[in-house]
Structures are given as structure tokens and as C-alpha cells.
Length: 340
Ligand SMILES: *[C@@H]1O[C@H](CO)[C@@H](O)[C@H](O)[C@H]1NC(C)=O
Image (cartoon, rainbow, N blue to C red; front, side, top):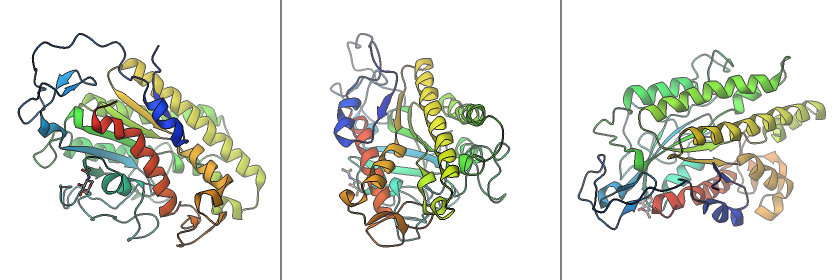
């Protein structure tokens, strides 16, 4: 039978093979005439049947995709919903590409690359990610109270963009909702006492209550990025404590396993959705174990050089982000082109 979730493994050779697994289960018979999807703007094209939502689409609906992103500093570009909106000439809105990323104001991160470099259609990106974010500030306190948690970010989406305002006429069929969260939830809590696995369940329940809210307003395509191995960041290495690194690594692995299970069960509840998990953790480990084969000098130093995996002691460099972006673009490419 069909796998519940397309798990995007970190090996590009496997990506296409895994992504080729049908995502939508048993299909009903196709309608015999072109049946326009209610969200389509233009005339329908009877050749353009979209098996994911079982509607025919006209060309206008396929002119662009929208990606609505939630996350932390690994994703932030400094977007504010009150400023310039994403448009075909300025696909990230404010600040324009590459935005303000964790590596600086002139350096792109994965979402910038996915939006403007590795896109195979026009992509408009609403990036609600905010540096330092945790899932819910009541569960894990962020480093400073002004940080917008994922809860805050989803609320900004719900109160501004969910209603499909004229500046963002997104449709279920042309939008992907992405989540790259958990780094700070674990970074600020792994060392605490108590059952960390049970706490991961608490975090993921809060996480998926937010995903549910997005489903409820029409989100149907979901990209989940798991937690990378920040136990191997220069910050953790500098503490020179192998035992704590192993402990943090174990908490991250448990979280990631539970995340994959949560996505799989969400897909069982809503079989018509697309749900992808990008395994950022495995990819980073692969690079850190063999930095030279990816063009990096080593796994532990940091700086602004093109040959650094890390741009500072806690964030991956732009060239490492580029590897993530290529993987992620491969994961969602079939969706853009309607071949998946
Ligand atoms: C990718 O995005 C860029 C920036 O918006 C755009 O100029 C380009 O046409 C897009 N590529 C495709 C294949 O649509």
C-alpha cells in the first residue's frame, strides 16, 4: 500500500525514488467534464487535472506557488506582514531577497534559495519565521520575551493571510505550509530533569494543534523540517562535554522520530493532504562526517568563508543552507509541476 508520508531522505539519489510513491491513496473516477476548482481564477484547461485535489485547474492557478513558512533563525528573513507584500517582482516582500538571515543581511538561507534560485515555478514566500522561536513560549521560554513563537507566527498568518486578502489570494492547491521548528525548544530544555520524551510529546501536541488550525482554514500541503544536529554546533563543541552532547543528540533524535510519527498520523487523518518530512538532521550529519566531499574545510570551525559549514557558532552557513535548499526543492519540485 502507499506510504503514509513521503519521507525525504538526505540522499538526493533516493529523493526521487521516494517521492515517486503516490501520496493520495485510491483515486475516485475522474469527472467526465472540466470541473473548475472554486479557487481558480481563470479558465479551466481540461488537460490540467490535478490528482491531489481532484479538480481541473486553469493556467492562472499554476502561474505561481505560495510558500508560507514558520520557524526560527534557521528560516527567518525579517519579514513583517505590515510591510511590502511578496509579489512576482519581489518574491519575499520585505526585506527583499536575501533578507536578514542568521548569517547576516547579505546572505541567503534555505527559503531564499528555494524561492528564487531552485524554484521551477514562480514562488511567493510569506516568511513568518522569527529568530529564537520556540513552539509555544508557555512551554519553552525563548531567550527574550519579544521573540515570536510559532504560536504567534501562526496567529499572524490566521489574522492577516488566512482570509485570502487581495494581496495574497492563496488557494489550497497552490500553497505549501512549511515548519522548521524545535531547535530552540530542545536547545533551551534538553538538560532539564523529567522525561524528555514525554516533553517532546507535549511540544508536538502544541505543534500539531497549530498545523490543525492551518488545515482548518484550507492548508493542504505541508512540509515539515526536522531538527538538525545542533549537538554538533561549534557552540556545543566549545563546551567540551561529550556527555551533554550525547544527551542533547538523544533528545533531538527522539523528537525527530516522534515528529515523523505525528506527520504520518496527520496524513492518516487527512489522506488527501500532501505531507513531506525533510530530514535536515541526517543531511547535516552526512556533511559533518565528510565535510571535504561537500567542499567544506572541516566540521567544527565557523566564519564567512565559502568553505565553512557554520557561519557562527550556532548557525549553518549559506552554503550549507544551499544544500538544504536543493534537497527541499527536489522534494517539492514534483508538486510544482503536477507530476507528484
Ligand atoms: C524563479 O524565481 C525567480 C524570482 O522570482 C523568477 O525570476 C524566475 O522566473 C522563477 N523561475 C521559474 C522557472 O519560474
